[in-house]
Every structure is written in structure tokens, then in C-alpha cells.
Image 1 (cartoon, helix red, strand yellow):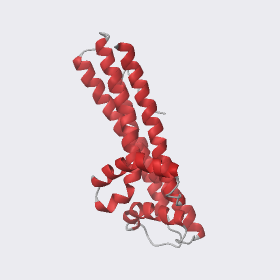
Image 2 (cartoon, helix red, strand yellow):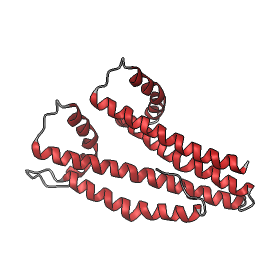
Image 3 (cartoon, rainbow, N blue to C red):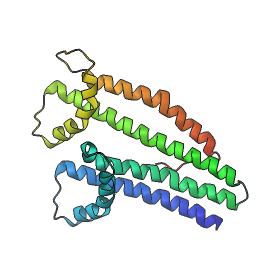
Image 4 (cartoon, helix red, strand yellow):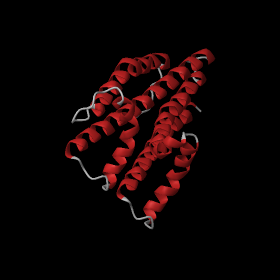
Length: 208
């Protein structure tokens, strides 16, 4: 049983890792308008669409277009927490932990999973804002599908910031947003993730 649970934890981590990249491939295909009649495109859609819909049904209407990205974060969270929970259970079976230790480790896994998801979201937002700032310097046409997607993603992030910045020829709100998100990640989220890792010890999370 001990060896089986260790194998199950590794297989779960690898399976979720593969599924995460299938979702990423599906997101990329929406950017390039992939042929909907292609069998590979159809298969990827069948595999990823249920999770997209599940996320969309649980998100505010204004954020529904982020459902694909939310599904990636859900898989990242599951990839961190589920294998770690299996390994914590394995420690109990080996007599190296007890119920109290299992609950403490579970709290650590949840803290790490939540922290990494938040950090992933913040870095994604930073990437979007940097891309939008660069595009803003060259004034691209919104008829370009990729530009339009970046605009849709960046607009809700920079609009609140623009209210507090003076009007200038160059819109500095994307860079201000990048600095703000970086400070939140480094000053708040990183210490929480570290604290979670101390609770999870000796179980290490599975993330790659």
C-alpha cells in the first residue's frame, strides 16, 4: 500500500501536469483561430471544455472570459495539493505521522497551493500589463486578434489605477500595476508560501 500511494502521488502529479499543458494548448488555439474541424483541435476541446464551463459557471459574469485561465489555476492548485495529501497519508501508514500531523501538513499544502496560484495569477497579470504597455507605445490596431485579447485582459487591471494617476501622453498605469503586483507577491504571498512549506515538512509539493 505504501508503494502504491507513492506511485499514485507521482502519477497524479504527472497527469495533472500534462492536463495543464493541454489546457494551455487550447488557450493558444483560441488566439490563432484553429480549424474547428481538425480532429486534434476537437479532441483538445472535448478534454478541456468541461473544466472551462465549470469555472465559467462559478465566476462573475464580467470575468467569464477568464474561465480558460482560471481552469489552468485550478489544475495547478490540484497538482500541488492532491499528491501532497496522498504523501501525507502515506506517512501515517508508515507510522511516521499521526492525525494531528496530517491535519497540520494539509493546512501547509493548502497554503502553498493557494499561494502559488495567487503568484501565478499575479505574474500572468504582470505579463499582460507589460505587453499592453509595449503595445501602447506603437499604437497597434485593435483589429489584430492578439492585440484585442491583450486589451480585454489588461483593461480591467489598469482602469482602477488610471483613476488615481494624472493624465499624461504616455499611459504609465500598466507599469504601476506591474510594480504593485510584484510588491504584493514578494512582500505578502512569498512569506505565506514559505510558512506553508514549514507546515508541510517533510512532504514536498509536486510542481513542474
